[in-house]
Image (tube, rainbow, N blue to C red; front, top):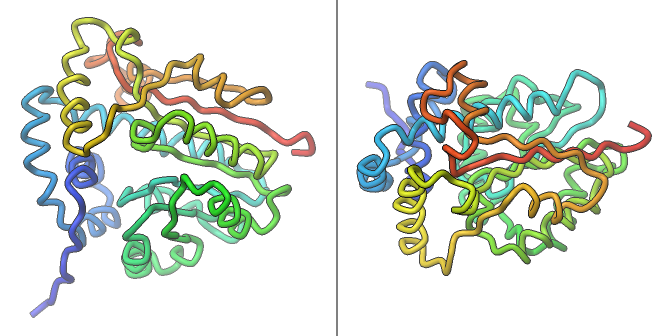
Length: 288
């Protein structure tokens, strides 16, 4: 009789996102096996509650994940430069598994979060043993920017000659702007060749009036549920100002993300139809 490994419990809000994205990963055997090692049951009441507000909310999450994965692939490129992909606040995101075919001596993946990282790496070792050596799962507080800088310097080995790609997915809403500014300042000082994928909530004024009830209904409950004072939002101008000079910044709203994945704008016909956006900020070193 085959013995199945015990499922590892995932927190409610993390499980919520994974349940919404599950359909997207069904055709990918390795990620399907990863999901089978996790207990997502705590997220089901939240899925039911939020789907009552927006029955197609999974489209938001799937479009976002599709966009981020493809963006990182493009940023890695096909040259020979040493590259570190860093997922801040990684949680149980399977992004490392999505990008596993890229990982090698030249391209490493670093996950950082407060907890669960050692267990997550154990799952990786079982699922992708030939790639898990190129993945580091580190338990740390990213708001400790001195510690963050030290950790990433060690992972990059030679920051001046390493392309650093930082992913912030599902993170920026929970961190106040002064703390986030310190994180981006820290990252900016680490490597001259830097890209930041900055997924974020938009201010209410930038969302069409007929759609505002969706982010309000969901994120006001998340705010109260997680005992936050408020959810943090950003406009494109605020992101550019926080990053400072030297970056080229491409800004992608949910209508564009949907079009990139499906070829249509069924759910998001216009830029202000959506409440999440993604800024892709790139700064290349002079020497390349």
